[in-house]
Image (cartoon, rainbow over all chains, first blue to last red):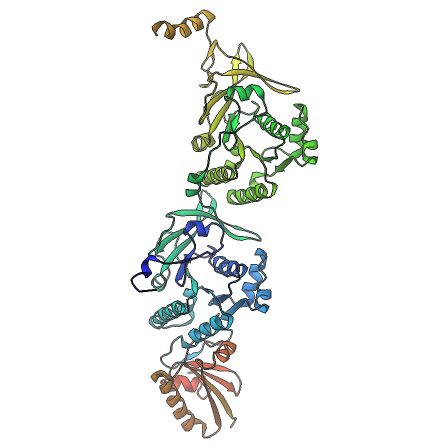
Length: 506
Length: 92
C-alpha cells in the first residue's frame, strides 16, 4: 500500500460489541489505537475486556495490559458477564501484562528512567500470543504511580507507535473528571490515540443514563452524537443504535386482521403486516380487549403471537381473556401465544428493551403487543422513553412483525398523554378509544385517527363489549365534541342540515 | 558482611543503560568491597524475565539479597537514593 492511498483506505475491525460496529460504521480503525474516556464507573474496564472477549470469539487473541486492577480482580469481576478469562489464559488466547501497583514500598528514584521494560513486555506478549487486539486499562494510573509525567507522556507515544508497528488494534482507557469537560484527567491521553470515544454515566431526573459518543475518528466516518448504552448481565455492554435503522424499513402491503371484522373494515381491510399501531384510551375503555382480540385474530390465522404485559398479572390477563371468549391458556399450550408479564420497575428501560428483543428473537412471533407503554414511561426519562420506542419500533419492523402498543390517557374524557405526544409520529396507525357521556350514561367510542398508506373510516363509532368481545356499531352522528372530551348532543335535523350544507354548495 | 545479590534491568545498549551500569558498579566497589554479585538483564533480550518480575521501567535495580527485597529505579546517578535502596543508609 502506498503512502498516498492510506488515508482513504482505513480498514475497520469489527469489534463485536453489540451496536458499536453500527455506531462506528464498521468497527475500530484497524491497526490504530482508540482512547475510551469516561468518569469512574462508566464501564471503561468492561469495554476494554469485552473488546478482547469478542475477539476471542472470532479467533483473534488478545493482550490485556492492566495498570490499575490486578489481573486477579479482573478475572473475578468479569465472571458475572459469563467471561471465563482463566480458561482463555490456559488456552493461550488471552494474556495479561500486569502493570498494576505492586504491594510494598514505592521504589527509590535514583535518576532518569523510562517505560522501556513495559514496552518490551507488551511487544513480547503480543508476539508470543500472536495477538490482534490489545487493551490498556487505564492510562491515568501510570501517571499516578510514576512521578515524572513528562517522561510518561513521551513513553506513551512510544508505546502507541510500537502498537501501530505491530499492526494490532488497541483500546486505551482514560479517566475523566467530569461528564462534560476535559476529555481526560491528564490532558495528554487523547493525543496518544488516533480516535476518541467517550462513555458517560449521567444522573438525570434521578435516573442513571449511560451513553456512548464517538468524538474523534481520524479520517473515517461514524455516527455522531450520544447513543444510549446499557450493561447486561452475561452479555456485557450493549449499545442501542437509533437513527439509521429506521430508514431501512421495508413496508408491506399485506394486510393482517385486527381480530375484529368491524375494526378491519374501519381500517380499510385490516392493519398492514409490518406496521405499528397505537391504541390510546382512558382506563377501562377496552385497550386490553383490543390487545386480546389482536392476539386471538393472529392465532386464528395461524400466526405466532407475543404479549408483553406491564400492567396486569398473568392471571388477570387470562381471566379477562376468558371473559371475552378467548382462551389464552389453550393458545399457549398450542405454542401459538406467549404471554410475558413484568413489572416496569424491575429494571431500566434499556434493559427492558434488550430483554424484549431477546424474547422476540427467540419466539419469532408474527405479531407483538405491548400493554401498556404508559406503564413503562413511569420508569424512564422522556428522552430514554423516546429512544426505547424508536428502538423497539424499528426492531419489530425489521423483523416484519406487526406491533400493537397501548397507551393510557390520564383523563377519562378526551385528552391525550405524554406517551402519545412522543410516539405518535413513529407509529403508522392510531386508534382512539374514548368514553362518551350521553344522558347520564357512559358509552364507548372508537375511531381510526391515522392509518398510514390507506383509506380508513373517519367516523367515531360506538362500540360495546360483551362475553364474545368487542362489537362496533353505528357512528355517533348526533354528538359532537367527543375527542375534546365535551360531547354535545345535536338535534337530528341540525345534523341533516349540516351534512347537506356542503352538497348544496357543490 | 552479608553477600549482596543484585539484579539490574536495562533496555538495550542506550546511554542511560550504560550510565546506570557504571554508576551501580562504582557504588558497589566503594561500598560493598567485593561482597556482591550483580546480574544485568536486558529486557529486549529476555522480556519474559521482565514479565515475571513485573518490571515496568528501566533501569530497575532489585536487591534480591539480603532481605528485604528493594527496588530502585532510575539511572543510579543519585548516590544517596541508591544507598537507601540497598539499605546501606538509613532514612533521615
